[in-house]
Image (cartoon, rainbow, N blue to C red; front, side):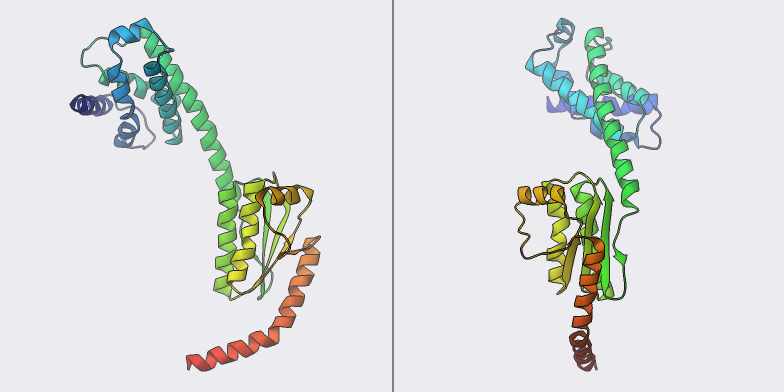
Length: 271
């Protein structure tokens, strides 16, 4: 069976090379790799089984599930629906050593499953593109030489929020700043994962030896914080960004003499 799988994959690559479907620059090898896991499942289904159309059997359900996943992957590669349909049709031919046409009902089901997955993948890709464009406008803002602010707005995935918190830490480290303000007042859809991502800023700033102030922590975020089991007591929570900024500047002024002395000692050690 392993040899049969390899032969089917070779036939698929040959069929793709011969058909040359429009891919928008996506290499045919990438399409073949995405399609290869489907071939053994197709090979296991004989022409008689495909023609019988027992779509409730395990083999059919497994095969149709993989077809749906293939459609999603082809959409994420940014192929067109027409190309996705052509790829699955070529896969059906590649899985059969005979030159007989695939059973019509099964072929229709296969195409329908791929299109279903393609629609899901297209929605996912569009969402990723929107998130990527929105994330370009995010990032830490330098208030002055001692204070940075991270003002988040819109709705973003926890991974994106975590990346911005990391960016805040890097910016503060590069600028030798020790005070941060994280504002949540414009950040949408509070939940446990988003709260965990945002309040990780406190730990990041503490690791730099600094202070972190949070503003915009309303009832939504307090509920999300409770759900995430985050302890707020050690953190510095303010009612507004203006209050956070005033508190941050007060801390910065208090720390200035010690910071100056520390810098002097560091300069001596560097000589």
